[in-house]
Amino acid sequence: MSDRRDSADRNSRAGRSSATSTTSRAGGHGRTGGAPDGRRADGHDADGYDTDGYDVVVVGGGAAGLNAALVLARARRRVAVLDAGQPRNAPAAHLHGFLSRDGMSPAALLAVGRDELAGYGVDLLDARADHLAPVDASGVTDATGAPAPQGLGFLVHLAGGPVLRARRVIVATGLRDGLPELPGLAERWGRDVLHCPYCHGYEVADRPLGVLGTHPGSVQQALLVKQWSDDVVFFPHARPLDDGDRDRLAARGVRVAEGTVRRLVADGDRLRGVELAGGEVVPREAVFVFPQPVPRDALLSGLGCARDEQGWVVTDRTGRTGVPGVWAVGNVADPRALVVTAAGQGAAAGFAVNHHLVDEEVEQALAAAPL
Image (cartoon, rainbow, N blue to C red; front, side, top):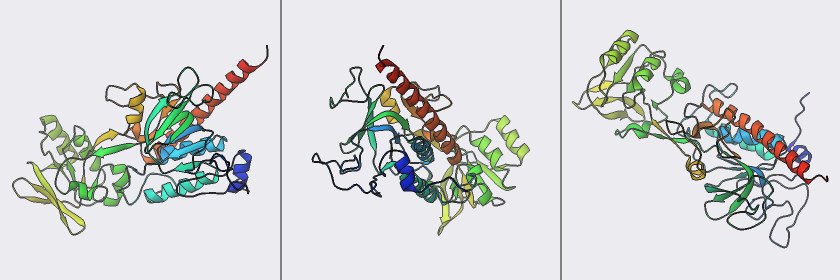
């Protein structure tokens, strides 16, 4: 027999009311009405924000952020998820490599996840965080002067003015793919212009494929793509090949089409080929390109998080950054993370954050105990 309870039971066991979201609103155990100061009886204001603050605010509503929130909600923490609605994989029709979710649309995965979190009382807010500000050493917030919880804490400033309070913050804001500026490329991105062969290679297997040489890793990408088709053409474009690269491509059976790429040619809603500067069109049904990953990490930069030699925020295995109380998970810290990987990273961060909060609560209880 399953030990899963309905949402009302989960919320009552958590000792708090159902979630309030800007997209869906759930009732609060039969309590109605509001307080004279404008707060609702469930402790939220009219915009759905918990006026008493949160244990954790998760910034980012993708797989990493939602899974972190799920773990924390099941640990009976007060959690809010801020979702700016900018998922990296939005152009893709399906996601793959996620056991039990293979072939599901990215939007459907997020919708299911949000429904699950709402049942645990998580506040799901369609909002964007502008910046994060730590609570200062005096124990009051450094912007409003309002009393803050003891220990670590943050102000989460939302676009448009509202400010949330959180004891810990998990940043899961992802990245954007910087695409080469080639006519016809952006329009086909996520459809038949692809990046990850592990995500989309099976669906274009045995077709005429191309790989554009727009990145230092493009040759390796071409060698990899050959696993899915015997007909692969590499387009060096503006990146000259050395003899070693040519030997490796030839050994793998990848042909080279010399010349600069002018544009990608589509016929209706399907890619037809790659047009070179001389006017020749090399027929291809799908093309792989290595984008430049650009992390959406302005919040982490504002806090002064340390970075590695490639410019990515440094974290430990749980996603903890060098700034106390701040975790970063998913593509904002790991450009190689697939959806399933990001979800796992979110879960690991959720475990770690709850342990961190427990340790703090024990220290506070010891400090408050009579001598």
